[in-house]
Image 1: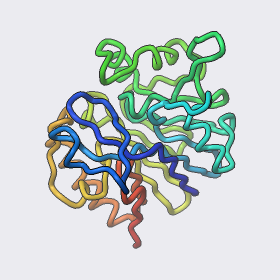
Image 2: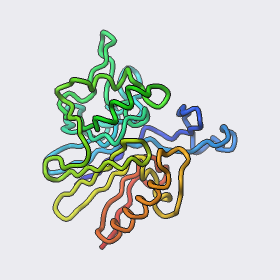
Image 3: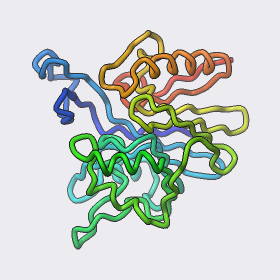
Image 4: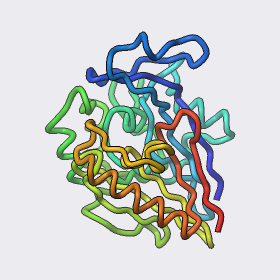
Length: 247
């Protein structure tokens, strides 16, 4: 399997839940609001024998009239129409902003015309009820009653090789994925497992729906990954987008 990180940049985020661009060379974290976290926003493409998978969809920024996620894909030789599946861990705005885009009439359309989107039904319902600032309902409402969308109910398997599990860790209906092909396993934990250092240390985050559960799951996954040689993908890690254990 081939892994392609699609970085949308580095940001700080505080209790306002606003993502503010951060230049690693010139900016000082100490000048940002108290409690600011430094994160990268990093969707991934995984190429398998069957699919070109997109794992979460970034902030949805546009540059010169083009979705940044589309530009990042094209820079790696991939057209938006090449994506066959979009796997969503949850629908917070920094993960779901790029699932849709406005057409010439100002209406939102799915950003990947040939892809099947996989979303937990309860996550979608909760996001539409909760709304701003964590969820951008106008952007994600296009998922409803759309023939390209598969709404999931709990745990399961997609096409015999993509496994998903609802954790209720970072958010109430957050899910994680294992992509298994031949002897390789890629684990994508979204915001349950966003950074390498959180895997290595006991860390309870106040911003998680169930921080203790997240910590316990990270410890479990790290041990399993070590024993089984998983590759971990980290959506918010400034330094280490991927980490592979050797067995």
